[in-house]
Image (cartoon, rainbow, N blue to C red):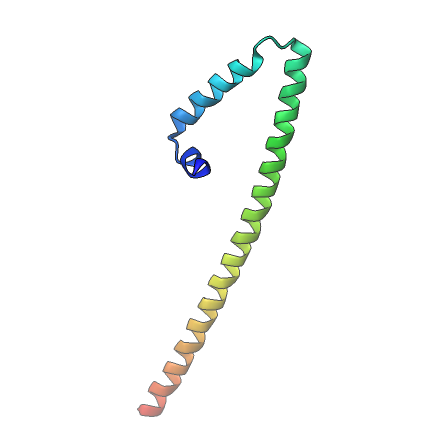
Length: 89
């Protein structure tokens, strides 16, 4: 799959690819056209960044809640174990 191979590229290769594509896109474009295209691509990038950041925040919160629930369950189990140990003494 293209997406898996693209995201598996080493950082240096991805950076070089970006440089090559940037120069290739300049081609015969005027400064105004380059500016317009650059702003358009940055808009796409900002949308992807905003979406990814929000998804990451929500995933982190869910993970944090799950961790808290597990810790509460462990605390409850310790209390029960201590109660059983007291009864056995």
